[in-house]
Image 1 (cartoon, chains in turn yellow, blue):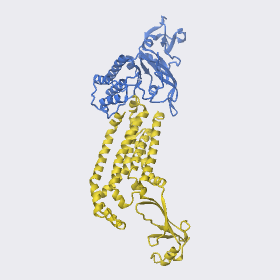
Image 2: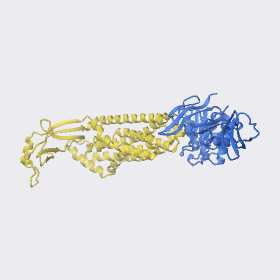
Image 3: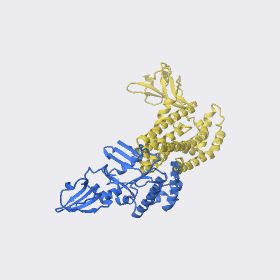
Image 4: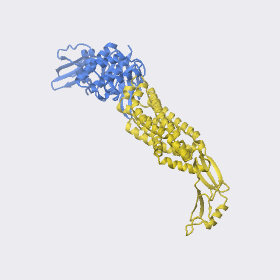
Amino acid sequence: MIWLTWRQFRAPLLSVAAVLLVLVAALAFTWARVSDLAGSTGFTGCRAAACETAAQSFLAAVSSETAGWLYYVAIGVVLALPVLLGIFWGAPLAARELETGTYRLIFTQSVSRRRWLLVKLLIGGGAAALCTGLVSLVLTGWAAVIDEAEGNRINPLIFMARGIVPIAFAALAFVVGVTAGLLLRRTVAAMAVTLLVVAALQVAVPLVLPRLLAQPVTSVAALDLNAPFGLSVDLSTKEAHVDIDADMPDAWILSATVVTSSGAEFRARADPACLPSEDMGGFSEACRTWLAAQNLRQKVTYVPGSRFWALQWREFGVLIAVTLGLSWFALWWIRRRLT
Amino acid sequence: MTEALSAEGLTKRYGRRAALSDCSLAVPAGRVVGLVGPNGAGKSTLLQLACGLLDPTSGRIEVLGERPVSGSPRVGFVAQDTPVYAGLTVAEHLRMGAHVNPSWDAEFAERRIAQTGLDPAQRAGKLSGGQRAQLALTVAAAKQPDLLLLDEPVASLDPLARRTFLRGLMELTADRGTSVVMSSHLVADLERVCDYLIVLVASQVRVAGEVDDLLAGHHRLVGRRRDPAGLGAGIAVVEQSHTEVQSTLIVRSTAPIDDPSWQVDRLDLEDIVLAYMSESAPQWVLEGQR
């Protein structure tokens, strides 16, 4: 069974592996250059205040080189790979056998249907995880210094293309493809459904899962009126509301609100000085004074960058659990319901 | 003698459509059994139920005394249109067979491929219909099953390929004594290889028996027009047609017909099968005597 699986799977496996090896080689060749740039712009080993400008000049230097677009290509590949593997490896696996009738050849040999599917899932899913893991982990290492300069490694979109989460996602996408093929029995339909389901998961997972798993931190501090903020006043009710743009390096900000000393969100009848004036010249001093007198605080809920690996493992665990559940369903289906 | 296949009240439905309904039959072991019937009689469904590719909706089926499951080493199956992996070569099909069957006879498989003149390096997708059928039969037979089920294996073949395939099948069963159940809607194919015949019409067995007994026990009677009811005991009418002056009957009789007013003709197997398959055949002629 292992031989047959390998024989049927080797062409798609080797063609994908070849493309990925080119990408990995490109990352390997530019690795030293990225480190050099980090050193020459002074980002490596920078201290406190100097870091921000050093990071800016480092990122500017990187973006003008090959590494600049390679960064985006590699992120694109890691994000697209699970969908592609689900469509081209997973969906045809059972659907093609059911569609062309060859299932009647293989299922009447001395191999049970469940064993047939189990071997195919293990080898195909393992290969999908391995290929994606290779690219993702190399990219995570290669882009580590860039991520540090950007301070956005924990940001959901970047987070999805780093570490071990793509591995679990590829395994899940593969099993989604196989299951769609089993249920629909037609290759093209299974591919289309796999595309829709995996793409929807890829949008939904970063939106939902980190919020559930991250255990965000909340910090409350006095509102700094010298930092940029936005004041909005409802013209009919005269109700004032302050928006802030919390900027925190290496953190994923879930929410930032302005609260009063009681902890409730600040909404109050605006001082006449804060109403929009004819000259549109920004806040008047009187308005600032009024705001300062309100004793406002900013309340920021965020996930610190230091949680990166803990969150990676949690998300990995959830996705792998879903993958195993779906695999179990496919194994049950092929035994009990396929006939 | 254990039965190769037995079924009782066997029914398979797809939604509201019944592909096989309330079918009961017994197939003896150690024979080459022909399963004949018109299209839609349920032959394919019955064979796929027998190899575990389908599960019955209701009723009971036993194959070699067990409930059929797919993946059994004791049952071989060649499906209608003889599916093979288009991307694999002939030699790779044999290699696959060796990997997925513990009882695989590699030497036999290679010998048979050589005998049938297949090129081991050829991709199965490039084979002709006849060559593909030979490959599928080789894979099913080299597994050394106790029962080999063939679903219209020669339907798509030209007469020469058909003859080669059937000769290959006969050699195989002669060597091993494998039980074979083979479906077809062409009696001429079955006549050449089968020693037992079952006629299945609309899921029901119309007649079943040894080919020799069927040939010896059926006669065509031609005589002046009369009511067939007065034929006497031991004679069952299978089919009848009447003109103004003449009656033509196809009858089953255990005893010789000695009424001199009938002209008695022998029938070939095709005549017998067609008589049972035709509309006027009475439903109550069932199991043949053995």
